[in-house]
Length: 475
Image (cartoon, rainbow, N blue to C red; front, side, top):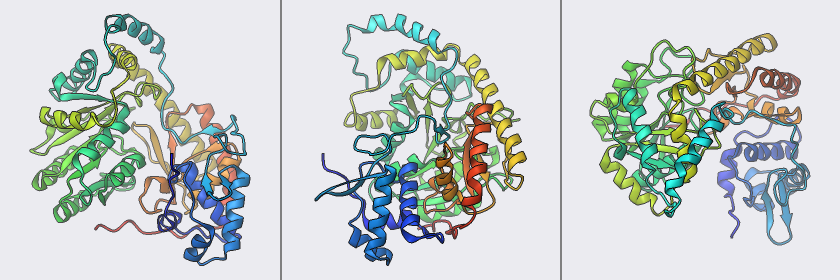
């Protein structure tokens, strides 16, 4: 298989303001290393030729050569004669550095398996016997699971039948499938900023021209609905990707008044609203429960994305799309060219967990509350100048660290035993250097360890704050 090459222009766009007062080769290497750690540059990608990158960055070739060598020494790049330098991750094939199993991973806001998982696996073993005589290729979803998903939506206020549900290999495949089905190259697609980075990546890969609407932890309602209405009216996006409940990464939830205005604006332009509701039922102490966005569609076409990964377990790669029957048929036709179906046994495990879903959610809420309270308490004690908004639910806290040093802090934290994602990973142009996402899914002991690592990394990170780029302009 051919190695993918990242374009010089695109790499420079991702680098942003990479100079930070240190020697140029160190700053350049560390910025590329952060891009690889965050997933903005994938492992196995060939980096631009040294001479070309040096010319575009207006530095000497010696600087780029030294930066690439530093990446190789750290295990984030490998080189072969005649084939250039490609990125890698420590511990992966071809890397010269071993992965440290002692690293605490705060890059994933996802819980461990629930206590009911062994019972669900046993139940799935009982349910699988009648299916063993079949091929096992399932591109729609097992009836027992689609019935369980439809029943849950109906209980939450959105009447749903099983034929309005398509089961996918996780929510990420659902988003990719929607992007491929609804977006043609050059179409505009609207997303929130900050946002779930893989949704942005999926829309961009489908050829969408991205327009944005802001979500803030500091405003009363979170969403700037005036901007949403204005952007939608001026650009007529074919698709709007929103996370109305416990938005990733801010944790904000959209009010009923904001939902009505957003849906009315989308309906006026014929924009399909993709509501990612994967964390919607993970409330801790939110005073108001909201039905699914599609329950109050107000004439807008709303497609809902759900997942077992956030409420149940990430090891269950099961997601789903809830939509009108005509949309489900359209999505299924496209899905047939993507894969051969969703794993049968995992579907049965999820169906079994739905049988005791309310009890499972209570367990999740208690664990999220413990993680949230530890983050709020320990951060206030250690970093009194940081701002940690009170999260009423969801999977993460969007922490304002008070200085544009998120990228340096993430790099320094790795040396202190902590993997954490810098704020710009959730932007689209290098913004949000003042923010870190911290997972509520971590135990109090893990939070204590993470805060201690951040405390050790903080002094060096604050020596050379980066300039902060502005928000991506609407086009």
